[in-house]
Length: 277
Image 1 (cartoon, one colour):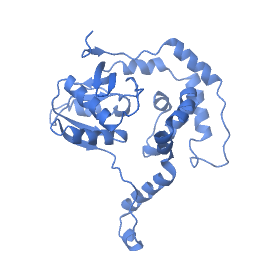
Image 2 (cartoon, one colour; image 1 turned 135 degrees about the horizontal axis):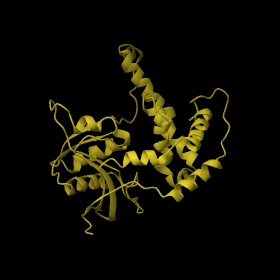
Image 3 (cartoon, one colour; image 1 turned 90 degrees about the vertical axis):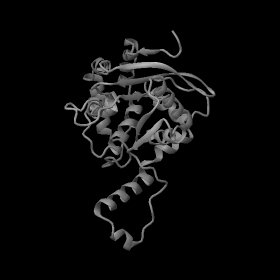
Image 4 (cartoon, rainbow, N blue to C red; image 1 turned 30 degrees about the vertical axis):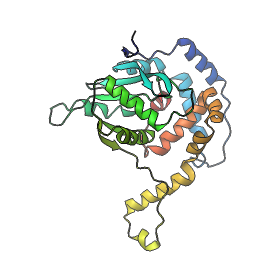
């Protein structure tokens, strides 16, 4: 098969892997926690105990796998300068559907029902090192390379021009795409505005702010002092952290669950949604 081929893809986790996961969950040893800690020091023990029990007794991966496989998923090999070619997983949607993080918005973008608003073709890639796309084993793969993957994927699919949307890491990739490929990336939308630090305001300046603006500043200050340590360790010593997250299913669960709680404005996640993440 040619390297440029676009291959249909289905998620299919081997039963052996699921059996191994069940065994690992049964051997979990949980830490204690301080009294009345709640979310002050991370994911509460009571929540993790509940999720662990649900994972062992109720959660049905095959059911969620089947839901994922209703989506138009594909795999293709993308070239990146200075690196080996990478197998990239993506959803290419020209009709209503969903995919994990963007489950609720994709149908609204792909099909406006009555035709009163524009509809879009949606390409939702799994970035290299994430999801079902191939990982990179060579140093130096950064924003320009992530942008190159996304740009080359769009060209492969027949889109010489496109618009992008990104949040969190995707914000930086989206901005890099527009800088490196301005004639192809004709518009960008981001839902995270990155700043180095909160502005220092005098008392009078702060008093002139609205309640919403003050709440936003307080939230930013909280993130810088209490919510951003993950970025420091992942950005400096990811290998050390990786041993724990790769080896412990519950460790990975707690790591992701904390972020789902802290970053989504009290969104009512179900236990099944958390465990699928």
